[in-house]
Every structure is written in structure tokens, then in C-alpha cells.
Image (cartoon, rainbow over all chains, first blue to last red; front, side, top):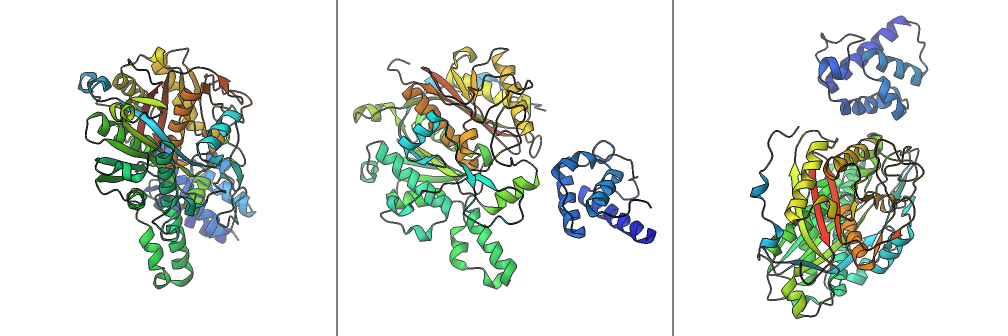
Length: 87
Length: 420
């Protein structure tokens, strides 16, 4: 199960980096997309659209404020999908 | 940030050219078709919001918009077949015909005079594009209907007006500066007549509600669930709208010569583009555009009797716009209203409809309200004329329009007085 979660996290990280135009080797779970990586905050909307399709979940727009780094994105999608959060 | 600004002295004061007056109005809006219906809607503070009927809205938690539902294009077309036009072109042609009729003119009256047809739009015929995309997704590119593809070009909005009216000595332009396009198109016409380059202009804006608009703004989180509350503390965003607003403009001498009724005079216009951010307005740049328009009109801020704001009711717009207004007008700015509270955001038509609202307010002696208002956002600090129109005698009115990409356009209208 842990393997699945790790694989999902990796997939999420790769797509987030591609959409936000961030180098995957520069990003950490806590580094901030906008402040640390100069990402366009509007592109997070695209991340939400991708997550909803890829994992068949629904993410409320209010969650955007939490999606400032990878940890936030993982947390939001984990809750939305009802995944086991222990990893 | 604005790094370079034009020197005021480069701006030609309006008084240097011909005087430009508004003598005809054509309106297609979610609160009514025709000037009389539109006027009664603005006065009564009527809302055009209702569930969308024009296309499927499955999958949305809410799908309320300000849709035009009582529109018969055939009534306004003697020469063109409505079926050959997309919805936005139908709106343009109908509103143009209405403006002419309202001005007491027929198309043959305009023959032999050089004119301008200037129509602003955000989406052009995106309703048609929606259908092409649907055909492509369901059946592949070979299933895209060529007849629909022919209707897509945004240039047809203005060209269709020329075709219906049989006007050959006109420049027909469609100006696609998004949510400020209506003001751009009217400003373009104002400049042309003032400079003597055109004797008359049929100008304004048109947009048709489409799936792309709903999906895009919904995804951005900019769409309110059920009502539009500009400058309210608890505003939840915009509502999409549609329609067209078209003005017949002419120079004062021609209006006088034919004894035309004059709604108002256009006395100033300015536009700027800061390209600072894709969607967020830049306060300094918006303020600068207002200053340029006031200078162009030759009026001081304290002469403005009310401002028709861009006022989309998004969190970002309303605070930035209100601050820009205070930056220009000081701590006690004029009343600042948003007709989008009633009409939704009709995109390219929005500022044209608002400009018509300004002309009617001047003629009829009132200030339209900002409806759905409960509590003014302390960050906005303006008197938005909550919920109920007020009787007044506005003489000088400012109409704001701000678009994505930092495209700002501001129009100044005045009560017509013989000695300006």
C-alpha cells in the first residue's frame, strides 16, 4: 500500500512540476510554488483540473489556498480521494 | 508596475476636434431588449440572473447566468438570414438596427457619408466554436460542419452590420480587447468622428454566452453561485452575461442639421495597457487610465457626478478598482455603481451596455443602483448606490472598463449643453 502512495505522490509531483514549470530536483515537499519557485499562482487551477480528472475526485475551489506546496497538494488530494493518509 | 507614462501634453484635448454626440441607442440585454425595457430595468434594479438554458450545464454545482431569452433576430434583419449568423453577430446586427431606428435614421440616410462600424467583443462567435469542438470531440475533425466554421470569424460581428445595412463606404472593425472591448470600440468611434475621419459611427460591443466562458470562469473560481454583489463584503464573484449595446454617434453639426434628439455628448476617452498580469488589474495603471480620460475630456475629478465601475464582483477587481478610484478622486470619490450587479458580465458588451446606461442616466436624471448589496466591503469604501436607483441630475459621468492583460479603457460622457 505504501508503494502505491509513493507512486501516486511521484506522479503528482511530476505533473505539478510540469504544469507549474518547476524543476523536479529543486522542489521539496515544503518549498512554496510561488515564493520559492516563481510559479504562476493561476496555474494551480490547472493542477486542480488535472487532479480531478486523474484521480476522479472533486476539489473545492476554497482548497486552492492550501495548495501552495507539494505537501498541501498531497493533503488536499488525499482527503478528496479518501486515501489512507498514513504513509 | 508602470515604468513609462505618457506626458499629459501629448494628449489632444477633446475640445480641439468636432463635438461627438449620442443620438441613437440599441440594447439587447438580460433585463430586456430595447432601450425602454433596459431603462426600466436599470431604474427598477432588475436582475437578469437565471438558470442557463442555452446549452447543457451538467457537472456544475451552479449554473446561473444573465442570459438573453426574449430575442427574435428575424425582427431586425431584412437582408441577412439569421441562420447564417452566429449569436454574437445576430446581437450586433439587431442592436445596430435598433440604434439607427432610435436615432430616427434609415440605412439609406447614411449612404454617401463615410462612416465607421466599430464593435468590441471578448469571444466573437465562440458559441459556434463550442459546437465545432463538440463535433470534433464526438466524431473527429471530419465531422466539423463547414457551415458553422464559416460563422466563427470575429470580424463578422462588424461586417454583418455593414451587410445588413447595405453600407459600403464604411470601415468595419471588430475590436477584441476582452472585457474592455465595448469602451474601446466606442472610444475608437469617438476619436474618428472628433478628428473628422468619419461622419457617423455605429459602435458598441456584443458577446454571446458560451460554454467556454462558463467553464473557464467556473474553473478560475471567479463565478458566483447565484447572484452578483459588486463591492459587497461577502461578494462571491461574477455572473456571466450576454447581449449587445450599440450607439449611433455623429458629429454635432449633423445631429443639429437633422434636428436629432441628443442623449449625451462624449467628451473624453483614454486607454492604456500595462501587460502586468494575465488576470489581476494593476491599481496604478487603472488610476492612470482614469486620469488620462479626465484630462482628455478637459474635466477635473471633482466634476464627475458618478462613476459606472467595471465592478465585476470578484475579490480582486473590486478592491483594486475602488483603490484606484480613491487614488484619483481622493477620500470622497463620486458615487460608484456597477450595472453588472443586474446584467452580469456581458464581456465585450459590458462596457457598451454600461455606457448606454450612463447616457440614459444623464438624459433621464437618475443614478442606477448596485443591486444584491448587503454590506459594503470596508476595503472598497465607496457609495455604490445600494439596491435602489436615486433621482439625480448627473452632468458628467465616467464609464470604466478593465480587461485581462491590463487593458483599461475609460469613457467620459456629459449632458449635452449648447455651449460646452
